[in-house]
Length: 312
Image 1 (tube, rainbow, N blue to C red):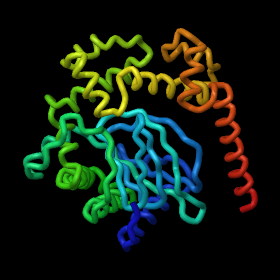
Image 2: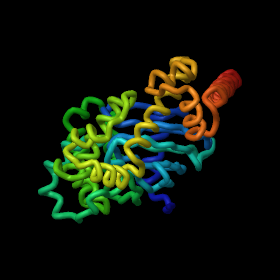
Image 3: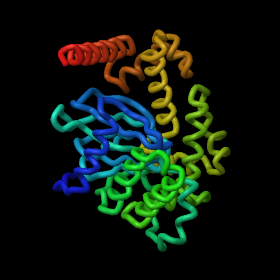
């Protein structure tokens, strides 16, 4: 989805570029708010998205959730309503026009207090997917700009941040994804029950998965858990756990320098061969080859950065 640039759109681009001067993911002084910059398309990376709103000001990104592929670009936003393991890739970016985005964490407890002011809203399917892409509205863009401008006036953050955060949630509640947010706030909804299941899996991913126990923890039958979990997350509970295990194993090898055997065992794999097979299926290469390639890519990027600094 693309749209012509407006003065406000350019202002959002300029703000993000100013607070993200270098490529990378940059936390800000505002809790739950980060800005992101990439000067080129890159390889796929894995991570976990929490309930959040991600606005792209420039460039485009692809997010893979299970078998679903979401592509969104400038003037779009990605709304995530539940903890989800995903694979991402920047698909449109350059030195002249870098990928620029901002992400806002959504406190689901704040939604309930605004429901009475946001009208009746729509009624979604009980198991609406936990991720969706929509076009950015002028009102939402304006609120995002004012939120980022608080970074220039840190003394105003305590007083004005709650008001702007409330407005952002209100804009979402009165927009096309209203019903999805309402499901997040209703504790008896299937979405809320599956969210609890996801949180438990994230905290205990290394343990053997017993579906009957998980279903009991979230007050669902086994068949209902399977049905709604797949509908909301685009994967089964077992596939969800596998994604978490493989992502954590990759992080342990890249950041903590663990070998493949130790990493696989630490995330819950008893069989090294099974770990290697599932890792290769997920990341396209066996652990040793994949981790070596990523490390070489990081070293090349670091070398280029140092060369640019020395030339400057």
